[in-house]
Amino acid sequence: MTDAPYALPPDWPTTEAEATAVQEELRGRVVLDEPGPPPGAPLVAVGVDVAYDDERDVVAAAAVALDATTLDVVAEATAVGRVSFPYVPGLLAFREVPTVLDALARLDVTPGLVVCDGYGLAHPRRFGLASHLGVLTGLPVVGVAKNPFTFRFEPPGPLRGDASPLLDGEEEVGRALRTQPGVKPVFVSVGHRVGLDRACEHVLRLAPRFRLPETTRAADALCRRALAGHGRP
DNA sequence: GCGACAG
DNA sequence: ATCTTGTCGC
Image (cartoon, rainbow, N blue to C red; front, side, top):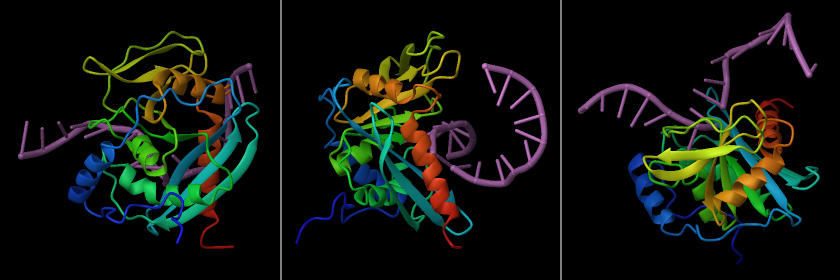
């Protein structure tokens, strides 16, 4: 018997109370003292995202692997599942992780870095979607969100690459990063096995032209296609 | 106690 | 997340 790649734990929760307990358990296994993949070296960066059909209770996930230097797509995978958890702020991971793991398992390359929508450390309990994905896969994971959630920040400078701390009180839980000049920043936080400095360097490199990193854009487009192409060939 | 709150 | 056309601009 070999272990399936990226399998869910046997005690994966279905209720909010169970989820809180599982989250605490996983949080004890996060690794925050690794610098992460060096920005200069060759890297496969994988974007993951999900789309929902609330009518049919269906969720589609996509994983798209890019060469982080050329931004060429080197692999793609999708997975479709049932929505098995409600949207609860702070517990987003339990809604998205199962189907995302399926998509990652179907990818025929090993990710050097995973980029997901949402947060890692920038989370009420310091353990968001990116953190869950990191601990469950063992991969370096960074979270890139479009909104500041509940956190405060001073607007970063206007230039591409300018950044400012994302703050929970006095604590820097992430960074507001300007990926395009004069455009609203994205909100970067670390998930697992990556430091914030390198996380921002990678995100910046992955977003040479648009606000969101190409990993996110590619995964977003693919999961929407997967959802649409479901139910009628 | 209630609302706000990533996707 | 999702509901949603054309339109303005580089």
